[in-house]
Length: 400
Ligand code: AMP
Ligand code: MG
Image 1 (tube, helix red, strand yellow):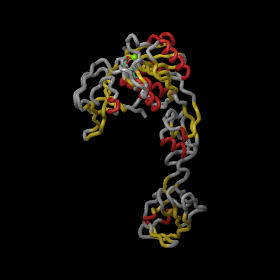
Image 2: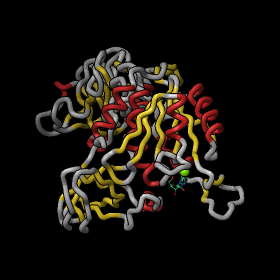
Image 3: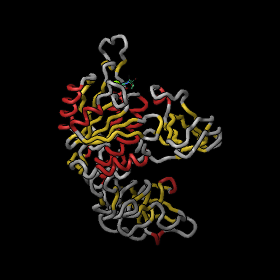
Image 4: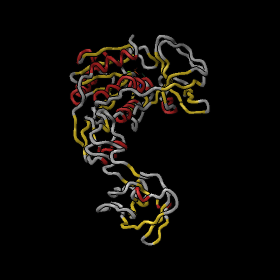
């Protein structure tokens, strides 16, 4: 038996290179991983500019008390720039975001002045009010997005604001995916007695795509040695990662082990965790191999724990694991010491802080527990039964 942490470390140690970089237009880069640090080529904002619609004035004209009248010498629409310098006694009507005219350094919001014809009356105000400084968002040369970051909508917008139109990202890790088992039927086809519809290939495809990978679907492979062998070899030629579900237990039809012994280098692990104990990890040719258990919750969980960080590392991501939090258990939970247990939980915020309850029955075939839940409750190796009110570790399903 190995621990979850040891298993994760061993897998990550096997991944020694990233997928190749590619250049994409910003409009196609959502969810991709930035390869290099992105630096600002200029200050943002590029000039001092107005934070409001109003009137720019020279500081010396600001009255200490009472009112003063200035002449409005220009009405600048958005995008227009005042040519020349503002002199004493003058004001310029200015829009939010417009560059502050030379000579001016304070902006009155329009609702704080009285305008009549070409004249405007102003009262006391603090100097520099409503001026956004050049470079106050980003200074030229600073790293705005570190390499290894995932590009969310806001990162794409920031890159665009710096004038970029394209971006260097790592290629999506390619994952070949197949289900094993004579009892597994393709949804949409008739189901013979004793058969179940394939769930895992759909859950796992979703997880892979959510993690920024691309999937080649090898369908359902029957429990026949030669077919499995041919499919796995083919999969290993076209993918960075080959991933199967089912067939890794010790039944006589559990062929993954036998076949992989012939075509690849494979370790069978008994991981000290529940659910999801038997797991096959190794290589076929140049591809990394993950043989996940057949039970739907176990395959999902082993994906999240072992395959997701591998895909993230392949894609060059900095963050490989989700952040975990502490929450108050709202019910007692049975727990065996010496292994790490994962319950599906519903986490919510209530008066007393973060609270978590389980989704109900926790059998490793109960996929609906993943649907009802929004997090994993992680019960560490050394801990025993949990009493209601105890603090427990929770991890969201998704890892940003
Ligand atoms: P196995 O490890 O192949 O013995 O599978 C363990 C359990 O998971 C069995 O009850 C299988 O029927 C079930 N199972 C295997 N593959 C799938 C699949 N693709 N979708 C849903 N259930 C599966
Ligand atoms: Mg099977």
